[in-house]
Amino acid sequence: MRIFQILLFVLFSGVILCSLTVIAEDMKINTQKQIPANTEGVFEQKTEVQNWKPTETAIIICDMWNEHWCKGATARVGEMAPMMNQVLQAARDKGVTIIHAPSSCMKFYETSPARKRAAEFNDPEIKKLLNGEAWNNGIPSEKGIKWPVDQSDGGCDCEPKCHGGSPWKRQIETLTIDEEKDLVSDKGVEIGSFVKAKGIKNVILMGVHTNMCVIGRPFGLRNMVKLGKNVVLMRDMTDTMYNSRSFPCVSHFKGTELVTEYIEKYVCPTILSTDFIGGKPFRFAKDTVSGR
Image (cartoon, rainbow, N blue to C red; front, side, top):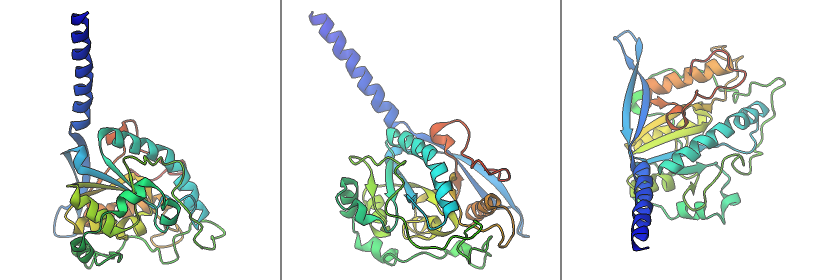
């Protein structure tokens, strides 16, 4: 009986240690960026495999609202959300921190433990560095560079065009929030303070919209670059607000690809969801042109 108990203890301990090893194991992340090939404005694609510790990594989900002012945008969010939730679950299982950032929806989450957890962080140095909750409209590497699409009309690609408004109340329900592990915040200072306090080095942005909120919000790509983080965009888990009838008059999905290329050249590298869940990258059903 004593021998059986010892064997059972050894077996159980081995299972625990094996689980811990899986959680602690570095993740191999395949980054992609565009680097100058010459002095004439020609770029070439460069890939690099990086080893990331899950405990030093966070994912920020930007504005995956339950409803957008544009019906087309709402439909695309709904189409992308199921696969995004798979990515979040896989990342969470590895030990990556998940930060849900549905802007202007904090009232809905005021009693949420995940929201209360995020609200505890308010570093005055971060607040000063990020200029409070101001949008970031450009970093030094973008100076003098032309934006690739015209989004001055709001980017609605529907006909007839949608009328605007702010119908969102919460994050789309398809995305699971783990109240014991995740955070909920739409504040750049809170998120920046959290990643500083917890020693987060790697930050992944996903969600919508790439050419607006994902890049410019107080917790967006530019500000994560400003904080010195190793930040990337998950390029198949995002979408733009771009009207294909506006400059440069390409399809909506080609417009998204152009914005992604801009980000790879002047802001930060990109990655794919396949680093977390394998298989093929996400692609919208109507996307027949982009090369994600």
